[in-house]
Structures are given as structure tokens and as C-alpha cells.
Length: 141
Image (cartoon, rainbow, N blue to C red; front, side):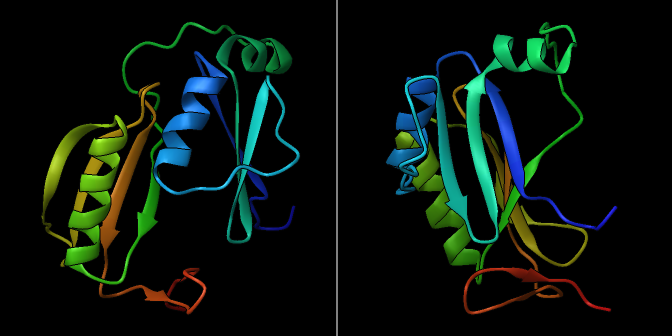
């Protein structure tokens, strides 16, 4: 298997509401989006929004999430100020701030928010990770 992720799909309670949240962050939905599914291009990866129940049915697993799912999504940014700005934008769009941005033990600066369906996003500045001009992350060798 090649080390690559093409699409991350979030199971949501209401696709239209979730789509509006991400659009309020300035993201543009793809023309491939429909009433029951929304897609956003995120650099070399795409994000999908699909009914939590339908997604669980498709994967043949129970749809009863409780507590922490063991997964977070992250967006790395170029500065501490950019982290503060994005957390503020997310809050205005309807996110719940879980952890305000702060300097962290690994030498960077980060905070967390939850989208309207409880999906957890970390917003971080990591001086040890290079961000390319297109925003893509390049890990050190």
C-alpha cells in the first residue's frame, strides 16, 4: 500500500449544516457535492461530509459514537498569529473552542476546536515542520 491519503470523510448529523460551517470558514464546495454529500479540495487531499448513519452503514459498523473517537484533524499554519486568527474564525463560524491556543511542550503553538458534529481540529504552528508555498506540510527526513 502506498503511503497516501486521498479523501477523509466525516460522518455528520446534517450534511447541509456541516457544509455551511466549512463554507463559513471560507472553503469552497466542489461541484461534485450533492444534497447528501459535500466535498472540499484541501490541497492534495479532499474532505467529504456524509451522513454519519449512512457512512456507518456503508462500512458495516455501528453508528453510535460516544466520547473521543481517537482521531483529530489538523491544520498547520505559518505563525502563532495565524493560529489565533483561524481559531477566532472557527468560533465565529460555530465551532466550540476546546483548548485556546497556547505554547506547547513540543516547541510550537496550538489550540483545538470542535466542528458542529464534534470532529476535533488542531490548529498549530510548528517551527519544526516546513510548510510549502501551497500550504502542504513537509516532514523532516
